[in-house]
Image (cartoon, rainbow, N blue to C red; front, side, top):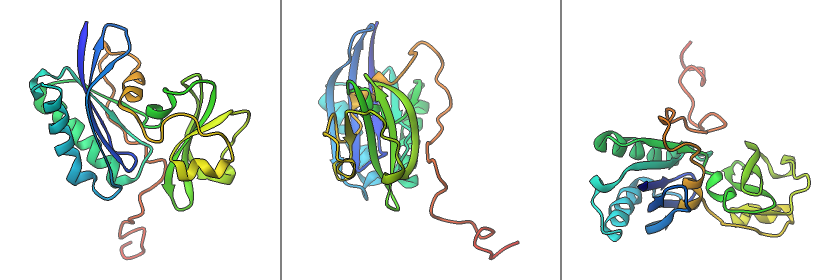
Length: 214
């Protein structure tokens, strides 16, 4: 069975939209992809990237069979843009929307024992460990010094943060469309509700938390 999949991820500075084609259980092929590296322009660039990717693939939105979206971990605003957009397309087209861990978009494309890290700000990283492309620990958030390294052979993900670990750089710097699609466990099952992996509360506080209201 062939599936044409729209892939979206906004968990990192890479605002990603891609169209992939899956033939049965085989590896998916990228029909078209648009990526903008801008941590402050998720809302402005995502929809144009989606429209361009679908057009580049020679398709119409109605030709899509499913949507895959990275659910983080990542910054609150970026995740909200990507997940809301994916949900809107799924609703409008009446297509299933599969949410996956964005770190899997990197880790599934590695081999051996690998640590994947992305920028969590506040001098911290989001991290997970993988063994031959399968996540075995995480995701979690911590200062780089507190991330368990164990016997990993290399590190993938954000170059600036990967450099903090003194390990060989292995694998992609940002979640890949192919990796995100590979993270979908069961294409025939009804997808679970989309749940963002914030891993910590957003920076903004409610009036009660700030002590203004009681």
